Image (cartoon, rainbow, N blue to C red; front, side, top):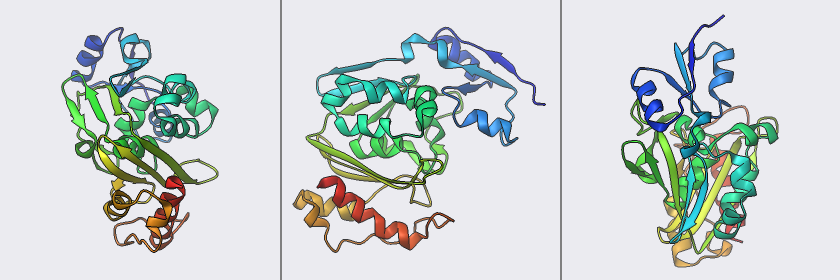
Length: 260
C-alpha cells in the first residue's frame, strides 16, 4: 500500500508553498488517482486544491470568458454565460467522459495533465486562450509541449484560463466508446485570434493545429472549402482504435462537419 502525506491548502499561497515543497497537486483527481491505484504514480505528498475558492468560478467581460482552474466540466457545461458566449466550449465540456468525470474533473487539472486525447486542450488551442498561473500568463500556442508535457514548472499552479469570445466556433468529436476520450477531436474557431483548427487524439506529440485546414477556412468559412483537403499521417498516432491514416482521413471530415 502506498503511503503519502495529504494536505488541504486553504489559499493559493498555501498551495504554492506546498508545491514548492514537492507536493503533487490534486485537482479533480480523475487521472492522478487511477494512476496511483495502478502503481504508475507514487507521490510522497498530495496537496488537494479543492478547498481553494479563488480557483473556482466563471466570469464573462470585455469579450473574454475566464474560467477558474478548479471549475468542473459540469459547471462549464451548465453555465448560461458560457452557453451564450461560446456555445462550442459548453458543448465540449458537456461531452467529456461521463457524469462522474464531469462532476469531479476540472479544467485546470485536465490542462496540467495534458492527456494527448483530452478535449480541453483542443478548445484552449483552438480558441487561442491564455493559461494563467500563479507566476505568469502563457499563450495557448506556447503551453502544450508534447504528450503529458506542458510549459508549467514543477511548482507552477494553473489559476484560470481566459478564452476570447469568437465570432464562430464548433467542436466535433469521434470518441472511443468505453473511455469517451477522442480518437479524433477537432475544434474550429474564427475570431480575435484568426481562424484556428485544433486537433486532439491524433497527434503523436499531443494536441496540434492543422494549419492547412486553417488556410482554407480563412479564405472561405464553409465546409465545402475543405473538400479534398488532406492531413499528413506521418506525425499521427496509430493504436488499437485506429491507424494514423484513419485519423488523418477523419480530421478534415470532422472539421468540415464543425464548420457546417
